Amino acid sequence: MEITDEKIFKVALITTLIGLIGMIIFAGNIEPKNVTVEDIDRGMIDEEVAITGVIENVKQSSSGKSYFLTLFDGTGRITIMVFESTMVEFKESGVDIKSFENKKVKIIGTVTEFKSQMGIILPNSNSIQIEK
Image (cartoon, rainbow, N blue to C red; front, side):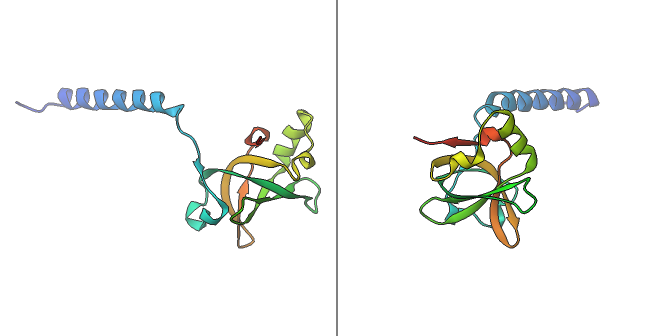
């Protein structure tokens, strides 16, 4: 059997189509990894994670445009950073960020490092939900 450019092209095309179909099928099933504060380390920077805990403190930044939430999950504390663009979303939907204080929440966000401390960036206002 002779290998021709046409056969290579057909194999590449079929492989690509199978890969795309697989991505479409499984894309809806991809969820962030559930973690605890003690699990978070520098190796997870830029990873999207889900974490559940109690918001102990809500503090406004010195500029007044961002907020820092302290989340405690029983294994430790971590800072959740809520930047100005996300605060605009909260205001547009009529949600006061301070209403999350002393509530158990589930957060989906991106792990980051800020001032040598691990933290989580809240990407949008839908990424925090009060747990029952």
